[in-house]
Length: 341
Image (cartoon, rainbow, N blue to C red; front, side, top):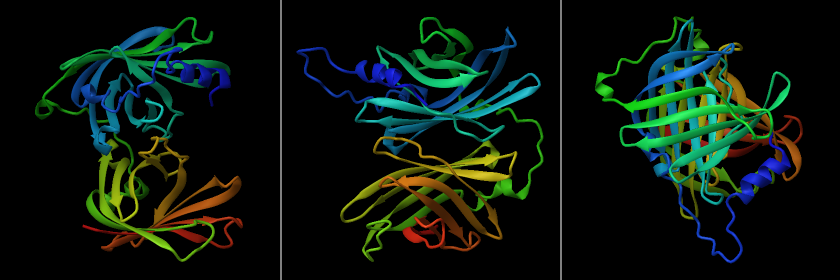
């Protein structure tokens, strides 16, 4: 959650002064410097004292540069940081949204939002830490073809002073020479591998019902591709979906994260229009069928949303998304998808 004043500051910071012509800046390639494989040396603040650690960071792109994902693996003494940051670009705002998640709980943080200026990228979010309102700032700086730096800091006085708690220096390495550190052994219940069947590349035929909750029997047909990449050794994955039809095209990312405490998965979607990652759907797989649910708002009304993967052991596979405005008594199909290798 962000205050109105903070949101207004971020908005006004990008406006031209009086008399200036507004020229949109294409920042969709601001993170290109980060693509590849990196050794990272970090210092992190633990109980008031600084500790150091070394690990591996990898980053690659989606949507032809308008989104990318950074994965990090860092042993930290008795703990192990296995995290990822999904970064999506909003071309209208000329800003980036940074979504971080940690494999220890599988939950996505509220996004840090910001932009690059003069080679420095600054991204801000708002949080509650130990009952105190906290601003969080993430900064990327000093980027060269072979190195860059990162710092995360907190502020408890509305940005007057900043207190770093995590700093990193990264150096590019040859991926063929990298030995990725492995997390401590964990039990692997079957649910942890719920999406294994989908890893790899697919062709997709997508049918979208026009009118959503007002069934019209009119459908838009699109064809394209799906590419599903795993990370965290399969306990998370991201699907990149690109489809087009006679009247429209779509670019979608589907982020799936395993929740080790509940043995469930979350499923969240982002579209390339503004890059916003939607609220997660929660669910699990049983007997080759996966069901995921959440509540959304449609035209100002609360509705239920359901996503189902059918017969995952078969090819072609099929999945559908449904809406309900009567608490699940009846469901209307919104998307009907078929995928083949």
